[in-house]
Amino acid sequence: MDDEIGGVCIVTQPGGGQSEKTHARDLARIVGELTSVAVMTANLSPNSPLRDEQEVVEFSSSAVGDNIMIAAVQFLVNQVRLCLAIHRRDESIVLFFGTTSYLLPVLFARLRGKRVAVLPRGDVPLSLRLRWEQRAPDNVARLFAGMVRVLERLTYVAAHGIITYSPGVAQALDLDRYKSKLHTTGARFIDTDRFSVEVPYDQRGRTVGFLGRLDVEKRIPTLVEAVAQLPDDIQVRFVGDGAYREELERRLADEIATGQVEVVGWVDHEEVPAELNRMRLLLLPSKTEGLPTTILEAMACGTPAYATPVSGVPDVVQDGETGFLMQSVDPDAIAAGITEILDRPDLVTISDQGRDLVETEYSFEAAVQRYERILRTI
Image (cartoon, rainbow, N blue to C red; front, side):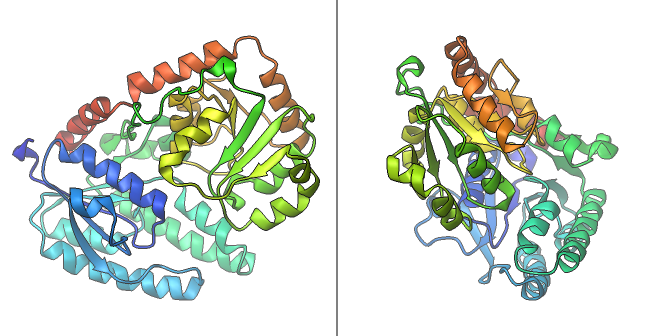
């Protein structure tokens, strides 16, 4: 551990879900190899492993919430609470992980003489707009999402450094204008011992699957239409839960009844490697992403992904080499693409190449080396 860096305080979303907390834990493990770490968050489970591994500072007891007006008020309150928490800290670097629109604490940290870095996990304003449009008029959702985008841009201007998971994420978020302080190699690591090839690829059946939230960002209705057109010899597993589960089960009732489609629901993260080892192909027709952990975990298990070329996805899914990119999100095209991919004679090679990429570029050791360079520059 190198004290020259001066300690890092990682700030995470107060309303973040389990995925957010898991990613924060991984980031803290990486940085913890280099210097002392404290994690500022809220609504953390009492039995979260993060409490045993790192110093945790809770700055709020309330999540942002789903109601737009309540979310706006709580958003401001959380920023004030966060400023007070930062005031009590001695770390020299404050890393805002996913909290890229928290302008007030970013400015306050700078006034306190700290170095500030922000790490966007994806296009937050777009994600918020897509969700808010489900429960508010479109113009209201766009207005509030636009306000978040303005705050985010001001945060980028104020920060000393901006870290993205990959060059593709930086390009998708239009961050090239900040080249002098942009670091595009801040990807996470994958535990390649846990996520490994347990079922040899050539022994897997014609099973494809989706793993994640069943929500609007993942184009679940589109995927449902595509699945309904697949031949009977292709089985489909939906692993996850969300707002579209009921619609999915209703529209694919016949396929579920025959066993061609299975809706598994949420599984514990410890069970994810086994789920990925069941599949010959992971499906991810997302509207927005950062650098999806699910894709990296799938590749570590030897499972290629068939995904939309959004944000950082093309940085790891190299079409025809480590996976496949959707050239169209039309349901007919997706269904045809799935069938064509499963009939390819080179799938074992593509599976091996995906595993090799994860082992080389996304190991824990590689992540530590990347962050040492980044933190010393900031």
